[in-house]
Every structure is written in C-alpha cells, then in structure tokens.
Image 1 (tube, rainbow, N blue to C red):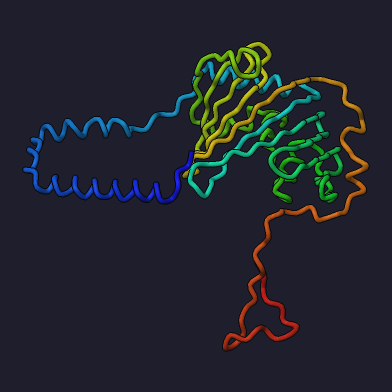
Image 2: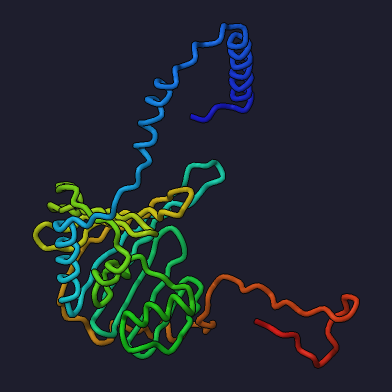
Length: 301
C-alpha cells in the first residue's frame, strides 16, 4: 500500500538526520589504514577481469535449432496463429508499465496476409491480397488503402516505410526467417529445455546481434516458436518485449475472400501515411527577417 505524503516525508527527514549523524561520526573517527600498493593491486584485478569483453560465439546446437524452426515455417504454404505481445513503456513513477496486444494472423504464400489486432489500444485490421493493402480502424470506421508489391516480404517493408505499420511477428512469416537474423548474428547459445511454455516441451535458445538480445522457446517436436523475449541493447531503460505464439495451424485451406473486407472497403478513406506528424517546412527569411516575396517558394528538403 502507498503511504501518505506526510509519512513519506517524515521518513525522508529521519533518514537525512541519520546520514548527517553518520557523516559526523565518520569525520571524528581515526583514518582507516591505507592498503599497501600490492593489496590495492589485488583488489582492482577482479574488476578488470569482470569487464573483459566476450568473444562472438555461435554454438552449433543453437544455430541448428534456429535453422530448424526457420525451415518449418518457410515450408508452410499457409499458416494461422495467435500472437500475444506484451511490451513495456516508461511510467512517470519510474518502473515501466506493460501493454498487451493480441493478433489473429492468417497468411498464404507468396502474397496474402490478414492481421486482426485487439488489446490495450485501438483495434485494427490489416489486409493484403498481393495487389493492395488496407489498414482498417473499425471503431473509427477509417481505412487507408495503397498499392502493394507482389510478395509478403516486400509488402511488410512497404507498409513500414510508408505508414510505420510494424508487426512484431514479421520474422515468423517472411520467406526465410533465419536469413532475417543471420547476417548480424554475434552470439547464439543453447540454454536448456522448458516444460511450461506453450503447453509443450520447448528448447530455449538465446541469440544476439549489435542491436537486440533475444531468448526464444522452440517446440522440441514440431520446431514451432512458442515465445520470444527481447531487449534492445541500446535502450537505456532496457525495456522488455515478449511475444507468445499459439494456436498454430500449418498448410490449412484458406478461403479466397479471407484477405479482403467489404466493410473496410466502405469505410471513410484516409491517406496511407505515417501517423507521426511531419515537422513544418522551414521558410527562408528574406532581408531583415522578412518572409519571402509572394510567388517565390522557399527551398524544401
């Protein structure tokens, strides 16, 4: 339970008094014996050893498991699964808050994708049929439609580049998941088995590149990923991101009309663009700070 402000400040003041008193006693006390140079050298050596950088190591067993999971996913002509993603965001109090989304994903290679997302935030639906992609907000009845490239990989990139649409499970549905992580891979090692994730026995592997550290739980029998947990290495807050994958169905028959929506088609149209506002263009000031003369447009980058 949280304490009242008066109780909290009373404890802070009491602690301050104790610290002042301790400081006064320390000043009155005789100086401690100084360590000899040899003793000081011995005391520093463990610290030096602790910061020694680890050499890049890719354990064969870890790489084999990552490749096996990739091969299983890449071989599927169609798939359906549920992705529950929890991610931390800083709070005003310091400790992070956790938000969660749930996505029902259906895909068919090479050019069909459906993502229906709910959770701690606005619901959304994403449709891609090999020719167009639609991002639909059902509560607001708004839809953004754009031409799309002919493969899932290219469509994922186009959606991110043009409208900042990103799916945490992208690495699961691309044509070759292992090749998405292999180029920058610096470390990979096998941890052991778990009996409690995904309702089955899983093999745990950790891998890292210069940007992210990931722990993945892979089904020991079916080689399907059940959980991924990531920390971005350059994030000063070391916020954690976790994705649980379940309800796997591979090589299922998907109805042809699953990757479109008449309701989305009839919604109010908005631009297929990034949601973050762009900074206003900088107008060049004329002489003595005056605005440019009428009809002379300022240069924009």
